[in-house]
Picture (spheres, rainbow, N blue to C red):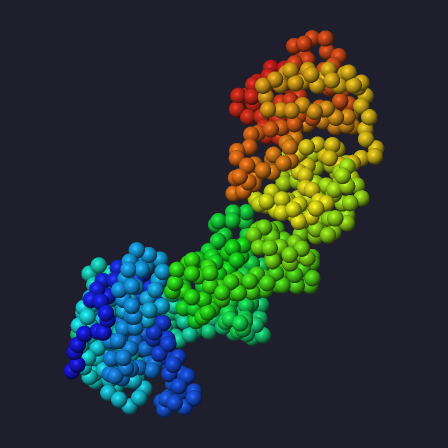
Length: 616
């Protein structure tokens, strides 16, 4: 029998492990099973090169809960250890510069997950156990060893009568960690962290039955060969869909398409990303991509590794080259991580371009379900923006789809302003802006339908990148004032009459935030139209979605455009009764407000009451 002290430079290594190294104590099981997997795969390698003169067979990892004895056991059939190796790998804790480490991480260690970084994975067991035992037999022809430690630097190391190859870790679960003796809890952790480990994992519970130990309800809980570990040539479309359902069993809709990632230089990365149907809610879509390291689940917060706009996708990324055991600031500055992020951006852009080129009609049908990702990417990633020009689409109100180059070509004939800029009209809601869309179409203007929540930011970006292009919503500043027309409609009123009409309307609206404008339009057009300055409205929209904050709070400002050729304009002018004139203007303004959803509260109540009273 051997006994002694574990070789560490500070006495309080175990309290540190227990309290600081991980914010979630549940990580201990991931660490132990990762070690068991490594031991098994090492044996596989040594067997394949003839160094281990043993049959590899079909090894598995067993996880057993013994609730009566308050034990949790992790067993593998891997490479095992000799007593000398136990001394080397367990007692000689890989922990240099302990005092500096303690000082550096005493406040922030909860966020760093640094056990693996310092070779302390096995010792994470002491976060949940009062005592830990190791019973192990090496693949070499040497006696088995039994190591035991009660959470102090003291340990014992004796021989064991174990005859089968591999390692058994026995955790005597502490009183404050009894949840880890519950079958549901261990099932939850195994499913979360080890669902795709490369070695089969069997989980069971141990109970007493008529004086004999009996393992019940044991079953394989993982898929050792998930789709992302295979070559794309090995998989069919249905295989990708099946894997999607395996990742997201509560997701009932199939993904729109997938992107298989597979690169081994200058870094190693595999994975499958899926484009699901997306909604306008950006936040609810995020954190659906799972990050793995050698098939071990790490996190579903992939910010900094996956470009931000792609965090709305679903799927898996697996890379041994991502430094997982350091702080997020270090991660974001890591060169490999930046290369991986750039690679994923390029791969996604290339896939979208090929889908567009191969079957544009199908791509157009999927556009509304994927546009939020592409538009967000165009806003936040310059390299993606450059590539997106070849496949980003802009729907029209007539359900056709155009690229930006096609818009420039088709709109230039009759939609330029006095400075020669192309004016791109768009609507954000076909229902509420129907009258404005109809008016624009009557004049043979083209109108896009841009209804995503980030459209104001997007068109701002497009204008900055295209010098001779400006976007104007159909219900903004009246379009006939913006677009150069050779056949402008003449006014039936004289200049004095127009000024008189404008003065009467302004007097009625005195104290409001409406600027009165007059315009000669078709006599059948609406007599009064409310518009909002494009710049002002756009800045407010950008403010509402997290932009334009530097400009402060914008007031609500509107233009009231009076059609001088309307019969109502003439009626207002010829009315000899000032009260009647005021009522006509008030009624027309309220109708214009109602059409824009601006008539609310007390004004709406008064409007409804007035109209009921005027019924014959």
